[in-house]
Image (cartoon, rainbow over the protein chains, first blue to last red):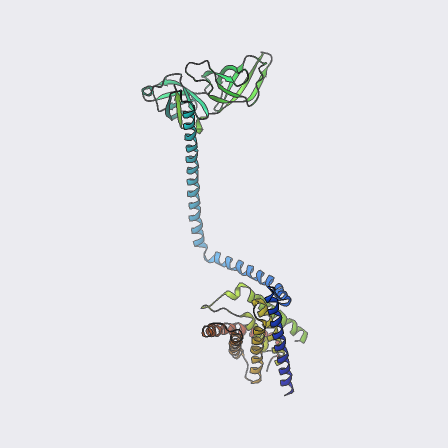
Length: 268
Length: 162
């Protein structure tokens, strides 16, 4: 009987404690806070619970991986294929964007040179060892030998042979081609450029005192009947001095190269 | 088992119960019913304690549950105290205690605890909540039964209820 009263007393005491704990909690809650004891309990338990969660997730992922290995592998292969397709489409889109940019430049170039007649053509053949290209325009459209083939970046080639519907042109990089050009200085220096490789040409300067510098621009000269003046060719990338012979050689990087373009203008 | 060892074991079990209750394991539902780990742990522990010990276990289990829930501490503590005291009452009936009987009374205790809690902090749909409490009680009973089997070895023969 005595034990029962002790229990009753403890029960009452604990219930009273619970009542005051609840009241205390409510006071803090009304202030928008968490009471310190609750906070302490949460601070002790929540980090361990987070660890348990992480372990449980790890175990779950592990078994999920084992039980769904086949479907996951299939899904992985499927997604890889999808990714390849997406990458391929992205490349296609980028190529199309470049083409649009190129065409826009071509259009701008056409508008900026209104006096000259321009014959639009496509490059339909490329022979890298011969440094020659075949164009889709021929004598029917007024193409003649010696005309300049240009892209928005600058001079690309010179027409060599003409058919009724096609023509062939030598690229500036062709060692067999020599044309007049000028290095943009004040006064400009005029000379002949000659092909050297797929992207470079050189210009021999017969005066070793000409103050040519790297990055000087090279344009077409004014002394050709068929090639219009001031069309960009490239820029100087290297100068070789030869004081024994009193000459210097300027290596020029071409603006217009075959890989960049398919659509060109033939300027008449 | 020495009282001090008992104290640490019970504290550890309540801590583990709290951690499990807070973790996502408590959201693992069977037929839409989730377990109440602290109720289950408290029920299993109380089979090995005196009535006063049960009252204290109920108090602290309710306190942890209420703190984690962030809701009314009073409701949680009182419901847990009543639930745990129910176990000490069952022990007085001098039934032949085994795992099945302990499991059954754990279910009853869990149901009682949840029901008292529902009345102390009344929800809007009492019948639905009672159904949920009943389901959860079965869940807790099974967990408690498993824990009881383990504790039987730890507490026997000195303090186990004969």
